[in-house]
Image (tube, rainbow, N blue to C red):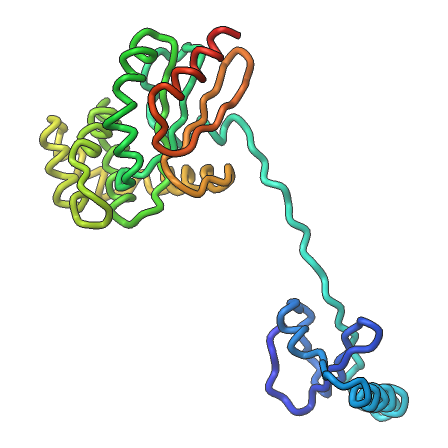
Length: 274
């Protein structure tokens, strides 16, 4: 409820219930706990509290007749709590709004990575672990990989993510993904600026007219926002975050941060053995 600076409103509390006497016809019925608490009388002295309670009761008993003669009603205001609906997680939460699949589409295991191209630990994963996973498991057909955006660091994160999706129109998402991380040099320091994402596109041989048109149209903004929403549904608080999913057992294993290759290896082998 919005607090009103009117001297004609009097709010008090009796037996845990909130009451307001007002001479105004239009009263906002939407109350919040914080405002309601501010309107409830609290005093440290039991004696003073008893006196004020007596005054409040007297106003209710003897004042109703006067109020009933006017058009303003006596309004009882009670605090209510909104029901929080549970978040629904489905396989679409993992698989939609992501990159093209890298590897065998029918592989037994899928790795979903939520990442930010400006993220330090995402770059650590790229430099230290990702290539070995690709060599040992993706290229052998056992695992495939999907990259999903969680652009939490800054506007250049969104620009880099959008550029990667524009590159995917020309079949070069993963090449662009790699050149972004290869050129990583920190967070919010300009390495992923608009000028540089254009230069990266040229370096991997993209049709620049088509790439620029895609960028100007901002045609993947909604996809990036939806991927961010998926990450929030899953409760992800940092990047990189990985979900290793077995297509046979539907088992989902979560891994957070720049884990060493051996951690992924153990998870993969355990799923492949079952």
